[in-house]
Length: 302
Image 1 (cartoon, rainbow, N blue to C red):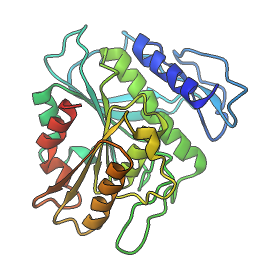
Image 2 (cartoon, helix red, strand yellow; image 1 turned 45 degrees about the horizontal axis):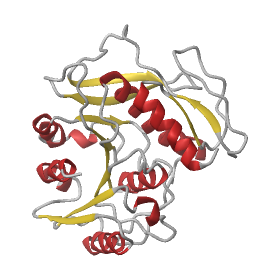
Image 3 (cartoon, rainbow, N blue to C red; image 1 turned 90 degrees about the vertical axis):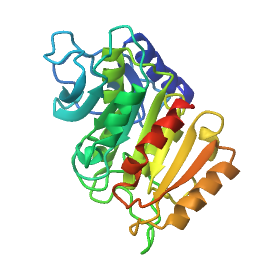
């Protein structure tokens, strides 16, 4: 099965409520723990690869189809580990509605990092009626790249993607995002044609990587203070499929604003639909929160 075939299986799983897909993995995981999962045969044409069983939402769960802000846990297929994620569903959601969905990838050690200050991503999601997911990325380690090999340009030189992470942990961080997306999309009947990614700093690299790897899954990406080094980046994978909003605060002293300008120019020059916005008064950790209204306006236009 080629990469497009793999993505098609993921899309089928999301669109039908099934939750099994084949995605490339660093190594074949151990035998699945006893848990409600679907199954499919691995493809001999993909190497190295593994058949990855996605967890299935169960109506008997205590918080099944609850609304509002929630902390959730699921069992990671193949290991049985309990992996947390944070979830927001508009309080007025009704079964049968197909709401758009934003995945905001953490940049610090906690699933709460992107909900700091006045929790603007959620307050704007309530106004625009979006589901919001904050996955852990398998492990609560610092500097999560979600498997991305693309460094962030910093004043003292490019970052080191995956530093402190094993290859297996990085691969499972990527799978964790897809697991939680499949779970929530199936449980709440989300509009899987309008799934969006947000990443900050290292997780912005992860967001661009995931969008380029699965462009049929993601409609747009929001990159905040995440100017990746684009050498070998597959711009063509995004062209005509995934739009990008690049944000940078004018008070950000951690990553150079000129590098975000450069990223936006390169994306646009490569034919990727791109918007660039400087956030007045925005610092490294809060620029995207200050720009939350503009983020959702951008997503609404996609």
